[in-house]
Image (tube, rainbow over the protein chains, first blue to last red):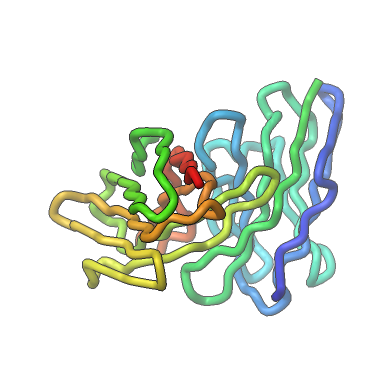
Length: 112
Length: 112
């Protein structure tokens, strides 16, 4: 069964460093997402991407965040200068035309 | 932002009995509702969904009930099995809106 794959599974970084989280969505999907879950809190929407551009973003997704789909298969989330509060599990997701999202296994980001 | 609320964070149930998970929402624009299941170290996986034109949707052991007037939905799992032990998230979206709003999740433990 096709699945969303995310790498790395764990990422440890120093505060102020840039990180890039990588995702390969399911190949025939049209919509791509990043969500995150801070430990003990709910899953939060960050950004959605459709037709090679951001279609919606949340208040969390400030200028420190950016997304790219550089080659038609990868979908990346970049955090330019990480903060302690960026520590979370980051989930990539994709979907076809209907509403059902398929999630990857997540990247656990730890900012020290 | 508490558009989707899941109270009673954890539930323990005997194998073979019914598990009932509840979810309330505040946004009257929501018209599509989903339940996701999450195991540790994995991403959420889609379980079942319901659109606002229905009040019930059944898929095997899983049934979702929607009460639009009360802005309430529930997930019934019967009979519960040990493999159902996971965190269950309620999620909702509005037509034309790209994002899913998630509840905080309910931990279900099925006791053999």
